[in-house]
Length: 138
Image 1 (cartoon, helix red, strand yellow):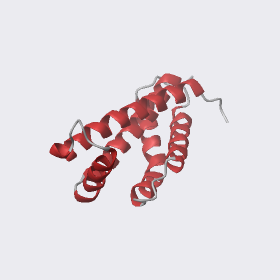
Image 2: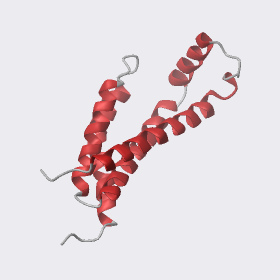
Image 3: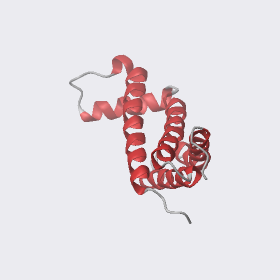
Image 4: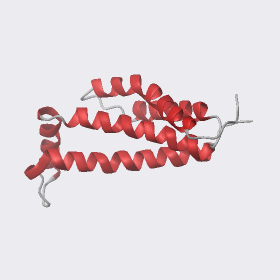
């Protein structure tokens, strides 16, 4: 197996996590709307989270944006590494799958399962996009 750039993978995965966090906070705030107040108790916040996840399109939007950041993370890893883009995309997919397993939410299972199924293809697609923008190897 060709040597991977662990630095590229770490940077890209960190960027992907930051993007996921920022996007999820923005989307959650959008769907929660007036239900969020600055002086909420923890129990009230948990109730708002449950309402948003059960009664809106929050989860499908988060899945869509999460897939986009997976594509972007693999693209970034391949571009930073500047070589063997598909291996770096696959590595990003494997790291992403491990992250899903580690952070598994037992309350809503289908997004976790769907995430496991689409992470590798999305990562390889990101690597493919990166490959199209990279010079030919000699």
